[in-house]
Image (cartoon, rainbow, N blue to C red; front, side):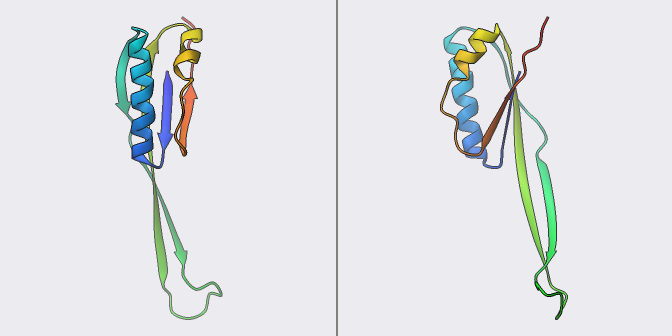
Length: 99
């Protein structure tokens, strides 16, 4: 199982497409990339650094997108598939399950 997560959706789609294409070139059984729920992080901070003045607040949001790809193959083949250029900001986590 390969988990991909990123703040940038375009980079995530590019890496996902490269991984799926590499797996299909090796004629592996690939379960479609599953979208996981988007994690939204909210941060609310006060604008004034000293704490005096009017109470004005800034609100920031950070969206973290995640995809999961299931591959059915040996660990050696997974190493060959994941040997691709990974875009900046995309985290790849490979989990190998023993059957």
